[in-house]
Image (cartoon, rainbow over all chains, first blue to last red; front, side, top):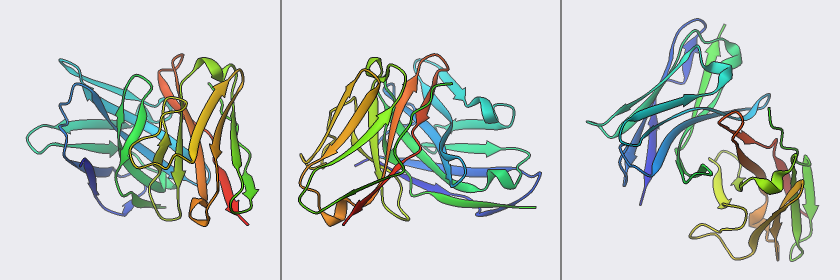
Amino acid sequence: QIQLQQSGPGLVKSSQTLSLTCVITGDSVSSNSAAWNWIRQSPSRGLEWLGTTYYRSKWYNNYAVSVKSRITINPDTSKNQFSLQLNSVTPEDTAVYYCARSIGSGYAYNIWGQGTMVSVSA
Amino acid sequence: SYVLTQPPSVSVAPGKTARITCGGNNIGSKTVHWYQQKPGQAPVLVISYDNDRPSGIPERFSGSNSANTATLTISRVEAGDEADYYCQVWDSSSDHPVFGGGTKLTVL
């Protein structure tokens, strides 16, 4: 059974860096058929995909235009996990953050982490 | 960028059929996924690739996709189906996924 377990602080100060980690069990971050994503949800923005990392003979990343200048998603093969770093946060980045596994060329998100509510204080 | 439009709310009586639409320009040419989200929980994939049910999803859930509208159909609706439902596609022009705004299903 594939599971994703998120961890990270629930409160971040403006201008600082938001950091979250997602530990994978039952699958490998180096899988050639899955991709590993961060998605956030807020009342104002709904569900918003932030970015992905995946391995297809080499590592690839793809980031949303809205956060491209501020985001890094890194795989950690030694711990079978991946992480999110979002720099220079503002209160607009307040949201529930989810890690999620996607499969197939249509990118269906079939496994989700439990979610982390992150508040950015002004 | 590609836009998906969902009605904010749909209401249905128990035992009846609920249909939740997702509109998009020529969405029939894309692959649509549907998610169910209950309060305080992460979304759950209920329909993938237009009309595939992941393991564990009841047969009461089905999907269709044609022209400019994709539809999630829930037959014999139960109280436990009350949730927010989101459609999602992959926008190949931007190489990004797109989510609809969500529909709140109320079971009367």
